[in-house]
Length: 424
Image 1: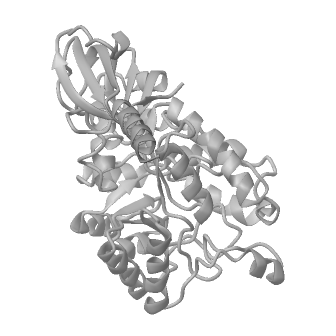
Image 2: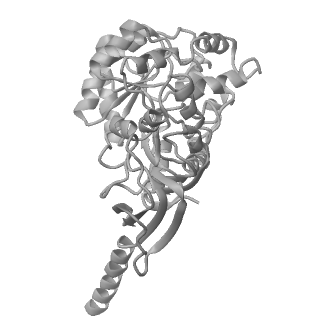
Image 3: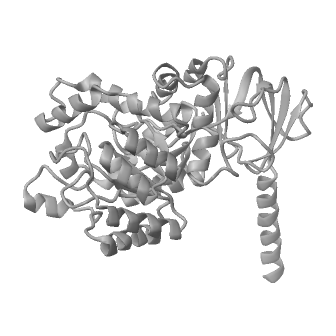
């Protein structure tokens, strides 16, 4: 029996070793190893066990037994990173569905949307604000290769003040109590505890609603919600646990306070003024503009989708779309790609890339960097994703044309690989 067990154990170990040593060789017509760097000509990329082994100029015949991918008429580049996507949400739904839809339904929607997002060329997605179990399930499914999709970084539920953006609102009080996500906090001590609880659940980062929000039913404006002391407690606790903090923030004073508290990114930043931008630059806070969110709400404005208080907030934001982000770029603040997908249809994410050229005044190479190198640095994975180099995860895409000359070519991605696995 012992010899039989040993035989099957060895066979199992041998099979695992073979699986780990599976090799893929790609021939590419051009290769952008890092945004902003000159592209290589015809090249050979060797991938083993989900990681890049080599990127070599010239076409080298694949080794015996290797899987071969011919992209000799395409440009190969790092997979794009989407830093603000609500995978379990779709645009235009009635807010009352919150009282009806289950977490299981959120997973179903997420499975569909994460596959769509990956096929559009986004190989890593940061999800700021999602049901705790929903985010964990989607993250595990793509990590294990059980379902097609990008690498997922999940915050779980975002942290909110009581009655603020991100808290349950718009229902009777007894319904609000049942739907409570246990994601609100009051005072520095309780807010620090919520961060520790998120860390215990395995959240990758923390999302807070530093100000009011556009699409929530609360009608308390779009400026600062958390106090300065509460935000400092959240940030210091999160950083101590190795998590970065993304702050949903529209109003100028909320943006300024969040930046001074040390948050890592401002999401939306709609009304950022000179003082808010100065605080962001001083504290190294990056700007995630989410311009496509405004496209999504503009397309649905006046259709009966939004309640009266939400429509009023929408009209406020549409008057200034992109202005603050443009000033941020002009002042040297790092702009990182993120769209707020879910407010518009998933799969349209790449439309925001062109907006950075047209509205923010960025060059195509700067835009590509915002969706690769800079995004990887924001999420603390600059040694893992965002570049094509030996040792990096094999997260890559292929397009026709040169995205560093014409960013629009990223709207038609012809090949996607995540963690060494092709996405069909």
